Amino acid sequence: EANPPAAPPNAFLGGVLIAYDRSGRERKVELKSSHLSSVIEDGFALTTIDQTYSSTLDAPVEAVFYFPVPPDAAVTRFATSALNRPLP
Picture 1 (cartoon, rainbow, N blue to C red):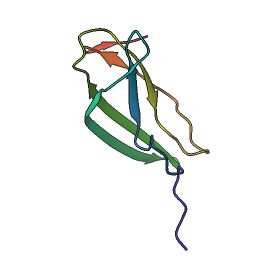
Picture 2 (tube, one colour):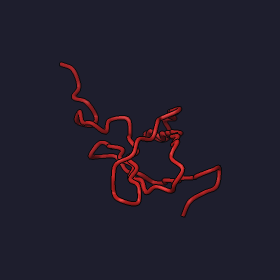
Picture 3 (cartoon, rainbow, N blue to C red):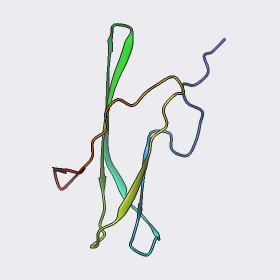
Picture 4 (cartoon, rainbow, N blue to C red):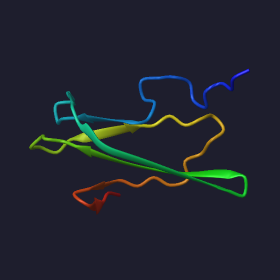
């Protein structure tokens, strides 16, 4: 018998960044690259996911990042940057 998927199928599987302009309209941002690495250590999988998105908009946007994780998983660190500068 096959194991069930770690996370149920959904539109955000693999992560998605949704940007909104100042008027609240959804704007397109393109996923330029994605890199995943995992290490098993002391019975835990330590996974790092680096994703780079690109926007051609000439004005600032707000964005929401969706990334599903299995029910028994935890996010222990999350970092974002823009123009190679960390965001708070």
